[in-house]
Image (cartoon, rainbow, N blue to C red; front, side):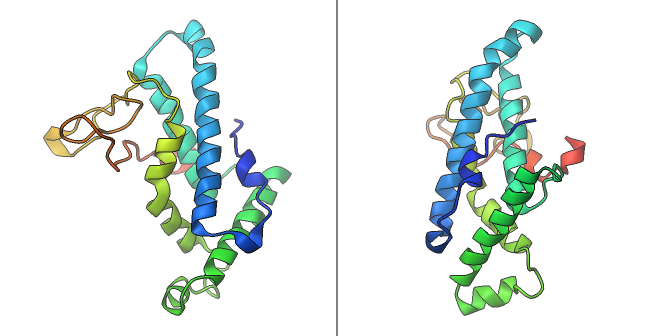
Length: 189
């Protein structure tokens, strides 16, 4: 497994890091990862055949890996590069923590959570939709997710345009991410 996390590995302007600048770097990493997957997909098709849901599933798994890395839940540790990335993310979220107001600092309690895992979890929850849009940017219009996850209950539909959910009119992207792989433990997916 090689995840294109180059943008994350090369963050070094810690003094100016904010929620917004981190989001840009994470979205760029997701964009490049999605581009890499969609460019290599034709080779995969020649070997295994075509299914419009396969590309969305591959993107969903990489999306989940990005979420695990951000939230400090990546099981693929032990590689010096991954260890350095984890240390950088702790530093980045420490800088974000330092810029929080008193109430938020009390909520995230650095003393109880020195790796900022709660802050990282909340950051991911707040930004996962933007990261999904970035990773699916290069997906084709006909790419669909393998089951109905847009909407709810009996009205659930497939994410059928670039692996994204559409509004009720079928026009615009919604803020719903059609996968929950990022909440499935890594060893189960």
